[in-house]
Length: 101
Image (cartoon, rainbow, N blue to C red; front, top):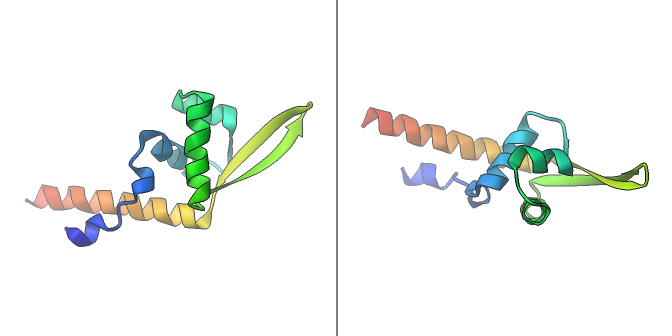
């Protein structure tokens, strides 16, 4: 069990960060407003969680202006995708182990 627990990533213990990564796993990219609406969070709350994931190199961003308004797109990185998959695999293993008990 200890070996499985080491693959759980603290970055994904938070509901919002888990939601961000889950959404990015099934989309090429998402913009700030889409993530905000999807996760039903405030600007500041979302921004802090995005910054955390960016700091850990799990996501990257691209900024542009559309009709003179800032538009930021977020993408999962290769490291982010692997970390998220490892995290999900660890959860699946824990569940499978629990079912055997």
